[in-house]
Image 1 (cartoon, helix red, strand yellow):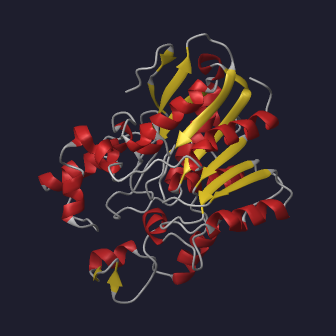
Image 2 (cartoon, rainbow, N blue to C red):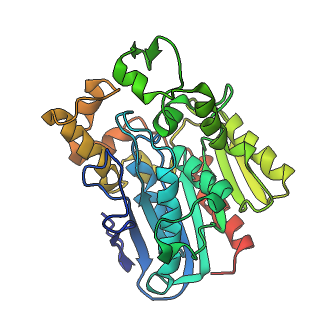
Length: 358
């Protein structure tokens, strides 16, 4: 974990015992890891929300990003939220409840975390950006299950969206993310290329209308309003995983509703670039603590405790072997992109213009 001098790093479970239940948790509890300055000066807070298709929480978009903004003067946190690694327990609103509680948790403990004026900025990547955007457009819907938090605002001040998943409908939707989030679309003969079984059928909606309602809810471009927080968006036009039209759809909705935003479309680069610098390319992104839930589930599959899975066993094996070098394996094909690597400076300047000076 973090070796920066003068940086306080601690883990905080965001749910108290008895508050959190997800059937595929197996002891995992969503959490925040802090990257705080030691000087006890009040600063803006940034919550970093890695992507991973709602199936895992990518370590390559976690600590490395938190420390980048820590160096820029923020007290930063990495959120490890609930994911559906095996495609066998759709998340629905669980991850949204996680990020809402994370914002409220930080504001409720503002004195301990030294947060200036309750300022909380979200910075999400891919599906993590979808989660940040979901809170941005649906924050008023999320009532905390603990009365102690219900009077604490969960509306972020600003949102940074990095190569975001936005829409669940139409030709630009990222199918894998929404399979994990809301379940498989009611279909006919197959589920993710596998033979249809009673188990697969049980994971699907009984009613196509019910599925479409939830897909509509999580198509964020359809829910932007004048109260949506300001957004900084960036993506490459050559993104081969999440079409750049996702960013464009959201930007159009922000513009239509008069919400402040900036959008930067870079000329080239693949999906998942994170900071796009040497540190990222070399896999120097911390230990894989954000993969705690995925590792737990992979171990349960290997031991035979879990048999209901909807991914190849070879993929499970990949999460069970050589965990010490897991992050380096994730970035082994990485290439630095100097054009893209300026995005943290651009985002920082955008935030600086919206909130009080640091």
